[in-house]
Length: 130
Image (cartoon, rainbow, N blue to C red; front, side):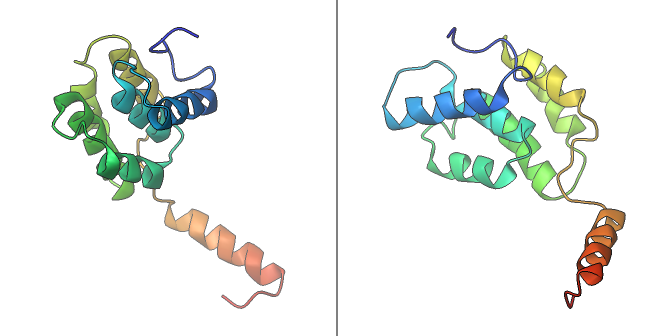
């Protein structure tokens, strides 16, 4: 497969798998951590993105910092659009990833109160004490 992938949309899980394999195999892939971070965030995997942020040696990379800012906003349940705008200034294909993320509006992770209420109602119908 070509690296880095041009899009996150087509097969995001495979991109994450390839990134993880490259990381543990110590393969030299340009932009590995930012591509991995973007793919995880595209999937809404903010906890995995946080673990990537903590273990990567690329913390000083401005590109990775920008993507992690999007992840932090998502974890806080805040709008990540402003942080994502900085990612649109990155070189290709990372700028394309930012556009793909923006198309998934809103860029937040925490469920709404209504969603939580729906889950509680469902569990109560199954006679779970909530």
